Length: 474
Ligand SMILES: [Zn+2]
Ligand SMILES: [Zn+2]
Image (cartoon, rainbow, N blue to C red; front, side):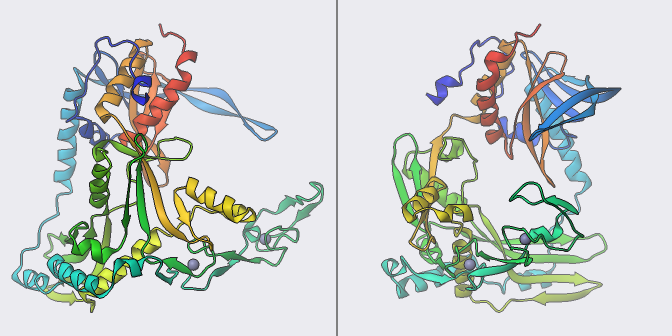
């Protein structure tokens, strides 16, 4: 039904992007100067790179915050076509050349091949040695014993609560007492608010550790349950790193971050890459999901992301090597293969610890708290400690179909589709989609997410909401 809702209303000729090109469309944003300056405009017939310029005029805008209305002037922008392409492939090809050029320019990345370096490399613990060690560890303990085993919370080191500085100390110089909304205090920065509901004016308050909910411990071997949203099929895996490595389900690879400079200086750090994503993909296939076109879904049905809860991990092994001014320095961490696997187990326990429970939820009954946690994808025990991570997965259609249909639906209404890189948070930007009129002026923003898949799905959601209010474009 999701599919049908997203079918174009009119399949007139539109620029088609095939399955093999959609990833390139994501990469093509490389070097784009963002929503205020540059945007790619897709219409039915062609692809145009737009550049926005300020006209020098301003427009009065208003914004409401609570009861107060603010008015401010924003510069008026107008879009100018900068470069035109015959189709999407033509556009992608031009961008590929550009990213190739960027890569060439910062191309100082060179492999280190000196015999001293290769010799040092050969002394490090290999993935094969990790497998052997994992097999030994598995024979020492059974997985039934492991269920329910705990470890000291890695976030608070068992302290349970944090004695924190209250943020009222940093507050402004004038504030209103919230109890009567009348009394107005004035105080200098660093002084506490005598009426602060959190610290009662002491400037300090106790907050239970958010990782262990104040219990002081974590589940050492959390389990992961995945559910196929459409069929209800389930699969569950105990996140026991040693067992998973021993039976070949979880791959650990050696990775070297090597830098070689023109001056002759060389540096390398050794890391382990743990392929949790591959494990998850294998498990998804077992419940009938094609992992290349799948997303996690929240309890209100909103499509969340394509990354799910588990990311591949890149952990520094503690081993590094460098050559500066002809002098060789090497550092070999004194960790055994078993140490590495045990540290990884702690790391997975730490990453899975979030219970989905906030302090305001704690006022509710234990049953209600458990329900709230489950809505947020966590099974918790009586002390609100996470024991299981639950992910509901929705099978999605291929990304290029979502793109082509969105384009067709928007052009059928007489508009065009804008695609650019938008600001998400400091240092982070991601693909975003816009509705533009034929001249390239912005009508509205549809989405902004970290990847093209999420961005397209949310663009669809917004388009469905507003499509009937869109006046037919001239
Ligand atoms: Zn803790
Ligand atoms: Zn306070």
